[in-house]
Length: 216
Image (cartoon, rainbow, N blue to C red; front, side, top):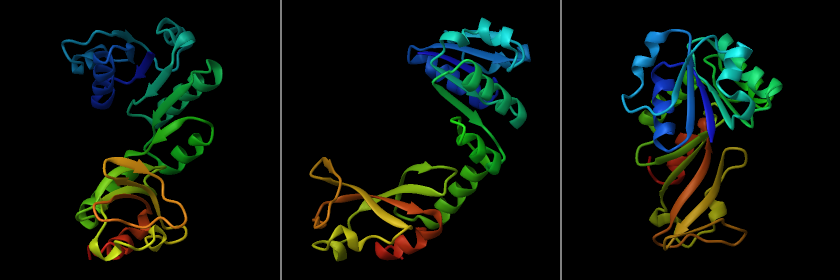
């Protein structure tokens, strides 16, 4: 893949370095030449000094044939403008942008720009560390409103239908790992000893889920 990363801060430098190590063609853009010092010494991609939303700079970076575009500068406005140019003008298939304002992040997600809001994610992580206990956190969705939690099926649920571990709009079993194989539960599926369950949980129902699992 040909990937353009805008912003050579800690996140941008790390992402660009990791993508280049995986064999992708990577161009990283920053307006400050000194920023490129954050890149690993073995970085095999290309550095380009310039303004993130300058079309001449973007075209020099190869945006006309880019497979993905990532904007992670320190400014929401810069990230938004460059992401929209990539998505709406150059039709880049995958566009990802860091936006600190959660409300703006949601708005631009509706325009097809994948966004992440560190403020909400970080706050959710703190809550998870305090409240999740023995639960594993597989992934989060949106700005952290819903997350996939996992744990071994507790003894008191063995033999009971998977629907017993659910609450409309709050908690839903997404998958069960049984004897090394994944399955999606259907009506009538029951928990068996040794099951590992992956559950979608709204952030407001984590404590409720813990109680249902017998962890509180």
